[in-house]
Image 1 (cartoon, one colour):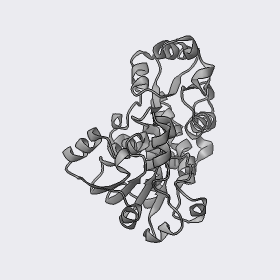
Image 2: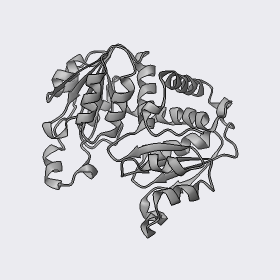
Image 3: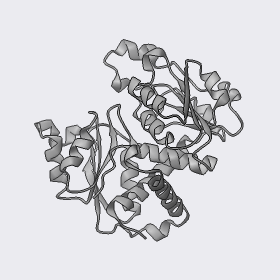
Length: 305
């Protein structure tokens, strides 16, 4: 039995196989409509979510399986003081696989140590979000035709942004990847990720606080919101929340084949006018998230069409 807690739990070959399966699902959806009949997915979301929770549920339903779970800690026995381990061991009695989001870093890992069914980390605090990263990799592969030889500009909250942390780890698997890290000083990438990039000789990176500078070089611009829920101080959030805003004027700096990505939700860091630009791919990411999660569920449950 396997779990997915961090994107580094997967090899490059395993990621490639998940992407291959996802592309086959997109091309042949009916062929996969019954592969999980009789299986149940539990979604344990101790933290709010729209895309991740619903895409997991949609993924299992399209595979012919069932879903159960809760969408906030308030609707679970966590309000009574039940531990994460006890919750997971209980829910495993009713399900075959668990997708878990938790505000505390490491909670899904702890759950996996005692769970009798596979656990998927659906986001743990500011640490990791491996299925969003798989979504991102599928989107990049479909839009650019490759996962190597690219300049990736990451913009916004790089300190608390778990999607950014996971994407850096994943893209570091591939050759000739360059990162441009765009953020205010207060939201720079954590030191442990910076040190990890230094250790990987195939990674070139630099930091800047100018969006236009990074956009001009980027094959991919990955925007993120400044996350209100990660701040202890409301004043700091208000001061930083509008640090970078991508609008149609700034899009003039982008190359004709640059793609714009965002894990969503957005607040105002991307103007809605950018949505009509053919380079905007963030709603394609949303749909791709369902297909890659279908492939992942199949892999962890060891089922095939």
